[in-house]
Length: 509
Image (cartoon, rainbow, N blue to C red; front, side, top):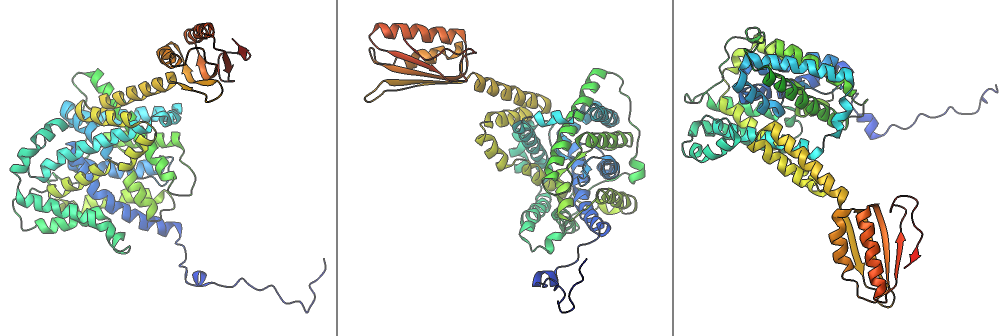
């Protein structure tokens, strides 16, 4: 090896720019996760209470689910940065279960759904969730959001919500006429805070908007004795209760278990895929995510908590706050547990109207104009509209089934769709273009277009169909013979995608 000559100067260090001189050091993973966990804790606390309120469940059941979702799903799930807990997407389902079966049996259904999710993970069926049409999922979430907003609007006005969205919509004018002004004022503070907070400076927005809205509304409501407040019977430990076996109707219970498992699994996987797009880390291990969500639902149901899913609102807050590992998700669950055990008394000063107003905004945010534009751009707007209407009028499962049926019908229409066009030639022969799937269903259209070809004229027929069945082929041959009898010439050309092999050669008829 030749030594460096003594007179050769050493290689200079790269110059330090202003950006490198003033760039703050990147925090260690533990420090980043600790800060992110506190942010997610502040976001999850009011949302968990509000979702429990909207579900008709004990309020502490929302905190139990938040703790279990953070710790169990955080440790076992396949998406390290996804935050799990009670979700608005299951609010309508849980409210219906509580009404039909009672809270104890609903906890049993939650635990059973967790077992089904574990089986889903073991069977590696997560890939099939990607086959669900996005318009159905977005329509389902929009329907759920409208349902939540309609119900919680009655609480905002100081009234009691009805059991169905249609009943809530019908009773809304009466609720407005008899609104309690103090309750409405407290709710307005929450809505105003949530809408104006995104316009605040970045440093101010470091504090989550839901927490600010609820705290400010609580302070405003302190001198208002007529405003109803949260009532917590005991602490977090007292809220832990074993599920109750039903006295009958096991078929309905089994159907409810499957419903919760399917909705929770699809929502968790969709949220995980959205989180993957927000960070540059490793992608979600979908089957492991189902295992983690299933384990969390088993524990939550056995402990008296709400069903658990991956929640995009909390997960997005986690990523934006700089979380690096799954420790942030687990720590957020620990902070909720500490708060619920040591400071649960503070929750009892929160007005119910503040949580209801928070849920109205959250529910309306599930109706996204971007989803409507996407569905319209892909021709799936009927699927979206039918799903939303079905969820509102008939219920979640029926609405989703109607969305799937509409999606299937649109696929069928697109499969059998054909295009037949005639262009008259100026100086030469005219052209008939036949495209798409030409079956017996397309014969009336084919006949109508071919009838417009002038008698005795020369014409070229270009068949570029994906499928040409016997009825359409026979009609085309018959018309060609009749047109030849009028003195015109017909040349038929088949594209490679035309009739089954062997395709006939171009022929002069």
